[in-house]
Image (cartoon, rainbow, N blue to C red; front, side, top):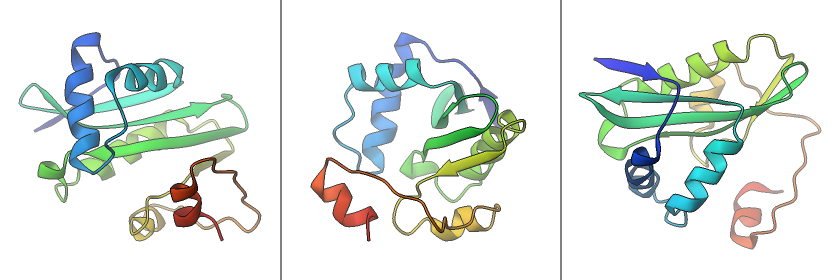
Length: 138
């Protein structure tokens, strides 16, 4: 059974790093992970048998805009519906916001489309990391 929790502790940083690494995001060290979660306005963690196995986070102004980041599930738990639970919970947390945006990792666009997300006509971004720029920008 999956339990959702809404806070993390310093002791959770190693497992969050492990989850990131399980999906190939190798540059996230514990200090960076702490920084991004501390700066996030919304977060949710999926717990199975007492262990965090996935998470999502967002930034929001609480009125008009929100951006969902890092819907990540440990490789060993993918395909079990956990990402769907995390995303649905995050959308519910942001229900008062008029626009929720996200950038899907390549190949995951259909997952988000099934849940109501659509491509932007005028979305733009600046990526300082050239590898990410090549992957995500036209």
